[in-house]
Length: 415
Image 1 (cartoon, rainbow, N blue to C red):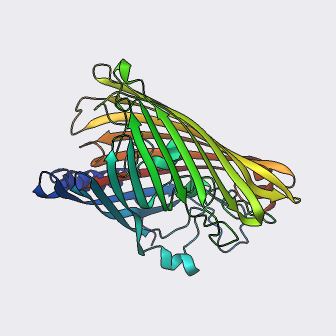
Image 2 (cartoon, helix red, strand yellow; image 1 turned 135 degrees about the horizontal axis):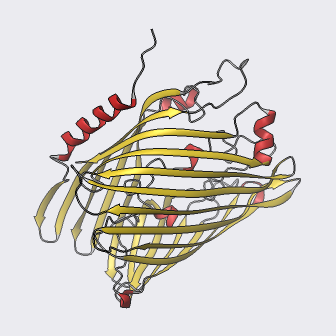
Image 3 (cartoon, one colour; image 1 turned 120 degrees about the vertical axis):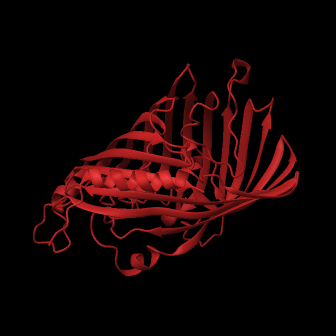
């Protein structure tokens, strides 16, 4: 007998669980003295998905040709941050991921079955604060190239927003034949072991990052290092506040707590397989300002990635860009504060299939409900992805759907 799960039942379960967390959603802090403390937190994210049709191939035993319903624990984390004294800070983040299905709807098997429920160190680092203008961060940390690389996993306005999960058919993440195209590993890889020098000038009006990181995609096996640099500007003279965090992340929204305007630019260079000199150029902007009870938010980012793959022995490029926004009503309605967020993003790579450019467009909309900020939130999300040009031809040749719309109910907590 097949059990049906109604959306109303799922919403009821979600509200009950999240309200149970809302009573005790503050992290646990151990404070030795004014200069020595540690803040402990447990964080979790759970999604209910209604997957759209993925394949037209009825002869394929692994094809999923119906709407699939399932729960997915996308992240469960143990997180600690703190400082030893006013010159030395630290953080560590450990995660366990449980994903029973691949994003194409098939079961997780083989090596991926082992990875689906393993615990691993996600980020760990130390900050040495010599002066506001000169600080050092080292460890397995964020690569400061663009805002996309810096954004917080627990501070999004589109909770389902992770590129590698919505390249449904792996067009840009290794499935195309005769190419090493994998923008998740190259252009959109956000963490590596390395060291970053960073600091602020003019009370945060200007912020810089420059760093050296491993090159995991280099065929020479870590012979060279990846170079990165980023510069961000905030017009503090207009009342906007600079962004900062202990481990270098940035949120998609500060939920009306402070007015933000940040304009950034970044650069990165590394050698990847087949002797490609992969260079990235990034620009981005972020705006959020409170007007009474209304908090509008708007963000934009563009990444030009040179030499991400090779076609007919010629280097080819890729590009990724997005625009997103949110409208928050900063008053309690029922138990929390509601908002609506939307995002459009495009990924394209040159001549990656049959000498045609491959491209995907994704549109996402989320109805968010913040019971206690990002510490306790519920979201109802719709994600639509359309593959076009060479990507559409590739999927048609393999009996795969080129237009997919998924629905998700998402909630997260932090204790």
